Structure formats: C-alpha cells, structure tokens
Amino acid sequence: VLGIGDDCAVFRAPPGQDLVFTTDLLLEDVHFLRGDASPEFLGRKTLTRGLSDIAAMGARPRFCLLSLAVPEWAADRWIEQYFQGVLELGVPLAGGDLARAAKMAADIVVCGSVPRGQALRRDTARAGDAIFVSGPLGAAASQGYRHLGTPRLKLGQALRRRATACIDLSDGLSLDLHRLAEPSGLAAEIGPPPVFPGATLEQALDGGEDYELLFTADPRRIPKRWGTRIGTMRKGKAGTVLLDGRPLPPRGYDHFARPRSRP
Ligand SMILES: [Mg+2]
Image (cartoon, rainbow, N blue to C red; front, side, top):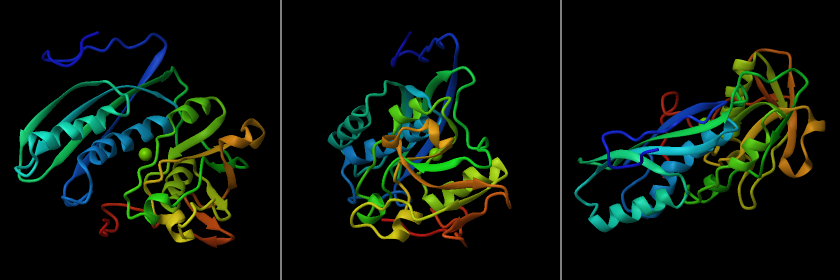
C-alpha cells in the first residue's frame, strides 16, 4: 500500500495467506573480506540467503527491509552498486536504515506469503518418505564461494502439498539434512548426492551455499525434473544421517558450533 519514504511501509496481508519472515546478517570479515567481492555480488548475496529460506517454505517473496552499516572505504558509487545487486533479484525494498560504521554490516528481513496452512516445514517428514535434492551440490565451495546459486522459488511453490518437509541447502547437506531429520524425529539414509562438475564429494556434502532445496515426499508425487532422489527417511535415532550405511557427521557451516574461516 505504501512503500519506502514514510515512517513505516504499509503491507496489506493478502486474504487467505500466511506471512513468513526470515532475517540474515552479512558482516565484513565474517561473511566476506573487503575487496574479495564486488558490491553487486554482496548485494545479491545479502538477499539470496533470505530468498532461499522463503523458497524452502514454499512461499512467494513480497518485500524486504534492509539496514546497512557503511564503512569509510565504501564510496557513494559502492553503495549504489550494492543496492543494484539487491534490487536485481526483483523483491521490493520497502524500507531500511543507513549508518556509518567501522565495518560493513547488512541486516535484511524478507517477508513472503503462502496459502494458509501450506508453508513447508522441516519437522513434518514421515518414515518411508523419499529424500530429494533439487540440483547438484558443491558449486560454491569448489569456486571459493564466488559462485552464488539461484534461490529455487518456483520449485518451492510447486512443492506445496506435495513435499512432506523441506529445507534449503545453505549450510551443507550433512548439516541441513540433520536439521530436517532431527525435528521430524527420524533418521535419514542416503547415497552420494549429485556433485557439481569440478567439486569434490566432500564439498557437495559439507560445502554449503548451494541454495538448492532438500525435501522429502512420496516419490510418486515428484516429477523427475524436480530433483534427484538421494535416499529415504527411516525410523531411528532422530537426526542421524547415514551415507552408504555409515554415520555422516553434520559438518556443514555452523557459526557457533565450529568456527572456521571461509573466504
Ligand atoms: Mg535456511
């Protein structure tokens, strides 16, 4: 109803829809190093992670809010190009804030909508469901995280009422599958996932930033082109992931569990 420029933006919730929200930080020296990426790339990266979360819920993005702390080294042109990167993804920017700070920091909120009661969740997989990934994994890790995947928004929406559970692959298959299996109260048995050309199996399992979808479903309900079946959900210790019968530890990227540098 009312976009950027007033004290608040006004969004009229569409009738019969649930609103979904996600928020993300992009911090200099934590998520990227100065000079390591172009401002457009960082702009796209700021929004991509949130859009991938919206896709994982089966939702359609509606708007985003972005607060940006800008260091001295970022000239006006840098800021302009950064915002171009954000806006390239086609989500209306409904508001935000801008301040000077010692290091660059971006804090983004993305809102999406989904028909009431149809949001895809992580905790609703059933024993016997097939496990799918929507594409090959390891592209970002094999390219020093200079490759940015495309959020699978159309697929997420198509999976509503077909997938039983869904999560996006932002932190690595080994960790994200654990994050789906555990709240569902199930174990997961998989074989090797499809690996992006040039990536290693380890990068496909643990690399992260793929932004593909990982979902569970009755395989008869999933057209072939939507993904590759990699395994089956089973009764067992909640959160256990077995790769070719052997335990696969959740080694993906977790800021709090295991600090590790990422270019
Ligand atoms: Mg996510």
